[in-house]
Structures are given as structure tokens and as C-alpha cells.
Length: 396
Image (cartoon, rainbow, N blue to C red; front, side, top):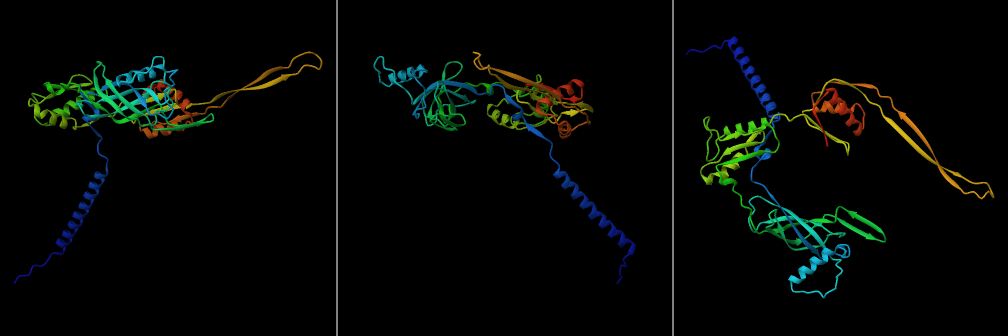
């Protein structure tokens, strides 16, 4: 029997290789864990970036009466149309008021009814409506909307509304005092309108559809067309010679539809869920001069610059001065005012703003100035004029 003698050098080498293998495996697991921990690239679906041309809602409007109010309705002397509407409604129900009789309608209010008719809405579908007071009613809380037609822009009736009004507020008044929470002159009727007529829509009947981007951007339009042409969709497969999507401009993409009508809905369902990798948005700073609000996106950068900021305050103090006439002088007392005006200007130190490539650095640099919101607007305008603010400044 021949016994095999192990070489100690080979055993040591094998052990070293096993240790290296385990180390490499551990390092690979660490890298995989780190890769899994990294945030995935931000991608949005086509349905979040665009809409299909022709698939839209339609506005409906109507006029009606809300009854059942607890004495908070219209005052008929100041809102005579409420009385006229009630008389017209009662006459349709067979109730005729005597001539010259004007009822005091404290429990009724004239309202306007608005809603959105969704695309492809069919007769019998329920939609929510918004009810808003048209006269001088104090509150619509607890009221009931009577049957009212809702018309479109063409004057045709597309829905009928009726139901209990839900008002998200409350209020009370007594002895000249008044307490109110939220708005009481408008409310909603959930499922308060029934669709009576559908709007014809021939979007799916054509050979092509047009996808409209929510924002005008040539790069996004190109990426949407490339994403559609690079994916086999139900009923239609794109080729290099015959692409199914073409960007017409910075907002509209033309897409061919499958010839089989039964595959068009699955085709669009798959298309609108395609992910799109977006480029960084345009650097923009939005300034609301009325409220002092400043909003900036993640693309805003700041070049090195120096800013000196000082406050100027003007104080005007008025003191009444009373001049009394001498006794038995038959004069009159005169009241005058003495004004003291003082001006104070705080010194503004020259501060250095470092180069900032991230939004957090930009915010930190601007906060170091210690300026108020209104002063920050002026500083941003000056930085833009000097070329240090790498962003579009939009004032609303």
C-alpha cells in the first residue's frame, strides 16, 4: 500500500488560497450590499410626464337651490333671484303663490354647481360636485341641494346633481360676537351628480395618437420616443426601419396605434408605464415678491462671490401737543402733533460666499448672510445680475 505524503508547502499554499477566496467572497458581498444600499436612478413613467391628446375632462356648471338651512340662507331683499328661482320651481310642482306675495326665505340659498366630467364617463356614473353660494347666505351647513341640471360649454345637459351638502367648517354667533372655523359658503356633495350623457371620444379610433408632455423639453421628448421605440409593446413591435414613435417637437410625440382595435387598450396601458430616465431640470429660483417666499430646485449652483448687506430703518414717532389758552382770553384749545424722525443704518460686513455646487451648500451660504426673506430677494437679484447665481430667476 502506498501512502501519499502531503507536501507542507502545498498545504500552506492551499490554505492561503482558501483564505484569499473567503476574503474575496466577503469583499464581493460587501460590494453587493453597498450597491444594494445605493439609491436607484430616478425614473418617471410616461403617464406622469405626459397625457394623451384628446383624453381630457370637461367642465360642467349649473345653477340650483339649497334648502333646509338653519336660518342662514339668502336675504330675499338683497338676493331677489333666490325668490324667483323658488317660485319657478314651485310652479313646476303645481304650487302657485298668490300675486304680490314675496316669501322670506331664510332657509334657502341660491348656489352655483361646478364639477369635472371625466374622460370616457358613461351614463349612470356618479361624480362629486362643488356647491358655492351665489347670494349672501351665511352658511350652507346642513343644507340639501335640489335637483339641478349641469351643462357643458355647448349648452347640453350632461349630468343631474342632487344631494346633501358637506361643509368642512362650523360657526356660531350671538350678542354681536362671532366665531367661525374654515369656510361656510361652499361645500361638496360626494357622488352628488349622475352622468346622463357621455362625451364622444374618437382618440382610440385613429391610426395614430399624440402624446403631449406636461413641460416643453426637447430632451424629454427624445427620451420618450426612444423608450417607446426600444420596447416591444402589445400588438406592435418597432423596428429600425419602421419606428412607432416620433417626436414632432418639444412637446408632442406621435405614436402609431396597433391595427387590431382589441390591442389598443393593452398597448396604451403598457406604453404609459414605460420608465423614462430624466435629465437634471433647469436650474431655477422662484421668488414670490408678495409673500417673500423663495424656492429653488436641486440644479441651482453658486459661483464665488462677496456680498455686503446692511439694514436701513426709518422711525417716525408722533407726539400730541395740547395748547391751552390763557384764562379769560376767550381762546380755544388747540391740539397739534410733533413728529420725531430718526434714521438708523446698520453696517454691512463684506461676506464671502464660497463656490457651491449642491443645493445644501447654496442654502448654507445664503443663510450665513443672516438676511430676511425680503432682503434675500434683493440679494438673489443682485447675484443673478453679477453672474454668480447659476440659475434662472423667476419672480411671480
